[in-house]
Image 1 (cartoon, rainbow, N blue to C red):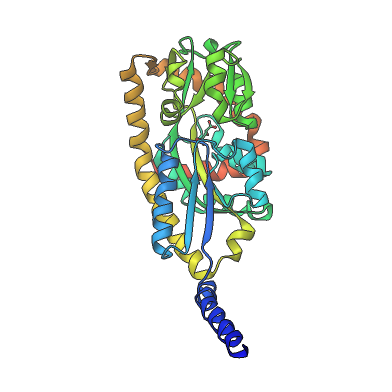
Image 2 (cartoon, rainbow, N blue to C red; image 1 turned 120 degrees about the vertical axis):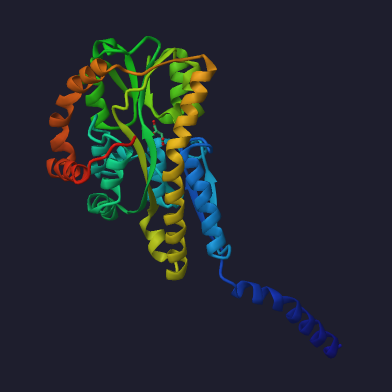
Length: 339
Ligand code: LMR
């Protein structure tokens, strides 16, 4: 009897052994990466590339789960979720980072401040860009990288040739005081809406127009519910990839180093494909025949720039006049020519 009981205990112990062994292997780290754009956009493609590289380079000790298209959270909710640790990684547009209390990022929304991609990279890849990311840390976030999207078009159901064409139109804006001032300056009525709500708001006439990159207008189908767009390039949309600070600091240092290297390579990839993604989206919208895309004349461009100039002065204090001056200096430190 006793020896049978002993045998049973021994067998049970042996059966348990592999479990003990398994529990000694490190637990897989999950990074939930939530974002609001479609998978086939610069941001969506960057998230996918980061996932591939991060999983590969950590020998699958890290798993990256991507939730695109506002599947988990809309614009402002996602920042709250990251802060609370409900997700670990986001890539909000720069202006939306104002919602964290760090208003400096809104500088990227200033109309006509950044003339082209080369100028932009002078800012984001240099000391000004790095210092801005650092400002996030006291707010519970770590900024890992800048990801590009592109320059904006304005769209509506009427031609937008001259500043007066905006008068009285309700325009969706991202949550940004600068964009609010920009629309008011044009005589339009700004309305903050989450990215995922634009299509329906345009379709039902709740708003008349919107501004976005070609890639976003195409993948969110805004071109199906807007008759006209102007290739104004009056402003820029790009992202900061951010993580929850506590989560990031608790990672084993070797894992963090691999993730940083995956992020560096994913960033090079995004910034290389962003321009071609936007060009392809623009070509597809033109080919659809559903929207008339106007390229402004020199006279129209000058009139827009003139009409929007006061926004830079008016908003300098909010974003910091030193920051605006530093950005101008970074841009001026090299003459640039490419969009
Ligand atoms: C928007 O809200 O218009 C965009 O910035 C969304 C995005 O992340 O590109």
